[in-house]
Amino acid sequence: MSGKVAVVTGAARGLGRAFTEALLKRGDKVCFCDVDVQQGKQTENELKKNFGDDNVQFLPCDVRKDEEFKDFFNRVIQKYNTVDIMVNNAGIMNENQWRTTIDINLTAVIHGSLLAMNHMKNKSTGGGLIVNVSSLAGVMPVSFCPAYTASKHGVIAFSRSWALHPELKKNRIKITCLCPSFADTDIIKGTDDKVHGPKLARMVMKQYGLMVTDRVTEAFLRVLDDADNNGKAMMVTPKIMDYHTFHDPKL
Ligand SMILES: NC(=O)c1ccc[n+]([C@@H]2O[C@H](COP(=O)([O-])OP(=O)(O)OC[C@H]3O[C@@H](n4cnc5c(N)ncnc54)[C@H](O)[C@@H]3O)[C@@H](O)[C@H]2O)c1
Ligand SMILES: CCCCC/C=C\C=C\[C@H](O)C/C=C\C/C=C\CCCC(=O)O
Image (cartoon, rainbow, N blue to C red):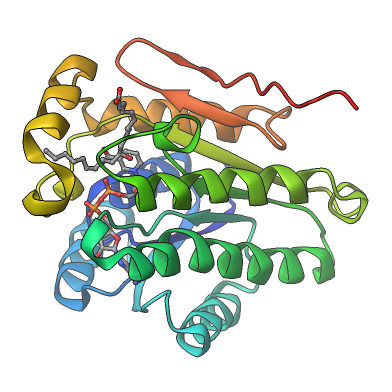
């Protein structure tokens, strides 16, 4: 039994919900947020039935809103006294709303990581893990969703840069990324046909295959269990489950 306290953003459904369930199964306590309050409450009820009232809590929060996000994070600390694992998962894909895409997929991931770092370095027990959900689109170009792809590249660049910081090492804080290819969640359904070129997107998706969420959860748990995950990006596709090799210039 792990017995840690975890935060998962955007976990009313999809991968966030799957990560929440996986953490609860390990014996962690999880506080999750979402902008979709109705779905969040429904998920909370279902999870409480399976994992116990005290172990899981939903709080409404739009991670784009700085004060709301800060308040959500503080309320988790008030309830559980600590945060050991922060999963910045909330994300959208909508090339028509490219600013909002950057706000949620990148800016809020930066904010969530900083909230977690500030807490983790000040807590008496010290240490913690931040898992930032990027995408396979974080390590390669994707023609039908350039803004989404930029946001996911940004998540990896931010996480790898902080991972090098001596202050994180001193405080035993690790920061790592998860990079799934297509997985069967609602994000796949909610795309705007005009911008993405649905034919191309569907063709690419057919070529890559669609993973069940359990496969992504397996990769998530592998990252959690790996002591050597700092600054890494775990790719998960129907065929691959391995860290990406970065070719940084040797100056
Ligand atoms: N499903 C895939 O194919 C896939 C592949 C790679 C990466 N990802 C990433 O995984 C993450 C989860 O996506 P998913 O596939 O579960 O999609 P999803 O649409 O099923 O879930 C996303 C969740 O985030 C919530 N959310 C959106 N905006 C929010 C906000 N401003 N504040 C709080 N919550 C918000 C949504 O309400 C939803 O519950 C995203 O970051 C996505 O980019 C998904
Ligand atoms: C039919 C619409 C599909 C839209 C897909 C929606 C969301 C997907 C989000 C994932 O994060 C994307 C994951 C991986 C994309 C990576 C590679 C695609 C390769 C593109 C190419 O080969 O041109």
